[in-house]
Picture (cartoon, each protein chain N blue to C red):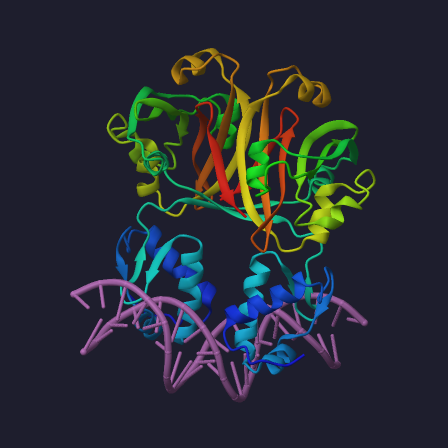
Length: 233
Length: 233
DNA sequence: TAGTGGTCTAGACCACATG
DNA sequence: ATGTGGTCTAGACCACTAG
């Protein structure tokens, strides 16, 4: 029960973590407030705040004004998911990235897509289908709709030469959105493009991207069999 | 080009975001250093630091001592993935959670699992197979191995009454690990338990959990057809 | 070696939520 | 009403690294 001076926020993170892991501070328990911890550790409250804020970000602690700081009870498994552009994903596997535009038109999307892009009935959008390859082997099939309301420039872009994935990242910075991950059987056409049997279980990623609240693009990516998304807790 | 005083870090985040979105600060560009921005905004450097650190966390900026702060070139799509315990996932859908232990034994795992758990050849581990249901319908099939080296108490726990998912979260706090997400066809037994046809495309989640660097549990979760993992960018 | 971000301090005021 | 975390300040020193 000595009180070694802890004057770096990382040291405090470690000490708090240790106290939780050792059962000293049980799940659900209230821990001392910032001022008391600062006094105990011999540092300023700012430093304690930095450490506890970090642990709250990680999901280890729950903090509320007036109520104090508690050890989270049933913490979720929290991971940060970084999805690089497709080219980087391929290159990171040490493979050569290839890109082929399979289809391009400017037409009215199906109702589900129109709703996502918040388009009125019959309104057109840019439709692109493309295949990314890794060392010549199919990697992912991309079916994308781009709202020409949100990004009129897209109609002029040469998507045969520059893939939409990267074009959008560079031309529509700072977008937000939603991602859905699921499993789906390969359809007939998809199977042919991806070089697998129809019905094969494929990893599917749906993404709706917004910029300043306005829907920009809706894309479905079907990955070739064997794809696995890996992340660290 | 007025210089309105920005004295809250969130306001600075917004202003920097605006400058990037407007193209004022292009991707890859070097932005002014903290001291200059503090002078411009009429606030202390600490406040600027807080804002820029936040944007760096989000993946918008790249910061390096001496080199300065740059707008990231091809930022990854970055999302935070929170995976609650299975019961919470079911309840969040407004359904009643059910849990059934299908199988339990203490035996030597297959080589792939033994390697993950860093067990020596022939060493035993606790093996549990269980089904979680939502309103009585199959939700996810869990196939789990627990290292009894890391968690000897697990041999005494009553996993017919308390599901391993929650038991581990409460008894082995603060674990780290890796997650793999993929798509897989349902095998014969899996199809029967999950109530679908063999070969059906299923969403699969593999997880290896460590505590203090020591492997604790390896689990494969196969979700019933239609499962979709959703996350916000 | 010099410039940049990283961190810490001691103090202050504020916003919020609980009792 | 009051205790708690949230934030801001002005200043200082440190750690890293590009040139």
